[in-house]
Every structure is written in C-alpha cells, then in structure tokens.
Image (cartoon, rainbow, N blue to C red; front, side):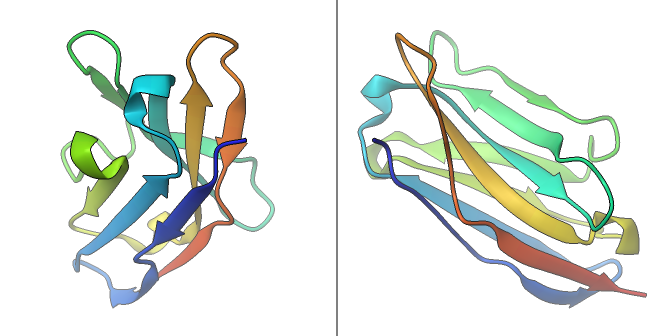
Length: 119
C-alpha cells in the first residue's frame, strides 16, 4: 500500500500562483508515474499533469493547463510538485495526487487538496 499525501492548496486571486506538493511513502524506484487530477463540483475527475519515473521522465498536461502549469519531481524526496501560474477561476477544484506502482500498475490516491481561485 502506497500512502500519498498532498499539500499546498488554498485560496488565490485570478492571475496568482500556487504550488502543490505530493509525497509518496515508497521510493520512486517502485513507482512508475505520479500525477495530478482535479475534480470540480458536478464534474468528472480529470487529468491535469502526469510525470513518468521510467526512462526519460516524460510529462504530459491537459490542454487547459499547458503553458501555465508545470509538473516536476524530486527523486530523493519521493515528491512531485505542481506549479500553477496564471490561475483562473475555472481552475477551482479539489486536486488529487495519484501514484501508480510499477509492475501491477496499482493506483493510489491522496486525500485531495482544495484550490479556489477568486475572480
């Protein structure tokens, strides 16, 4: 069982920035990818950004956040970060971190952190 803990959410004005952190309880050598998803009220959970710990460490983003959000990782801390710039009210959601284990690809979710962007 991989424990996943997020932090860094909060309230920010439109145009502002926030950084989310997500730490896994296991070394990234046992994790194939980590990423951020979000869910706004009445909407389905959607991918925001994902980073792979396999190979070159590629990342991918939802079209809605490209150019504004950056995902990065700190191998030594088993942690990924999501830097969110130029935030918009439509970015308001609960943001969840996902860690997917290597081998069986089991998925482990964090408890979520609220991000609220005021206009």
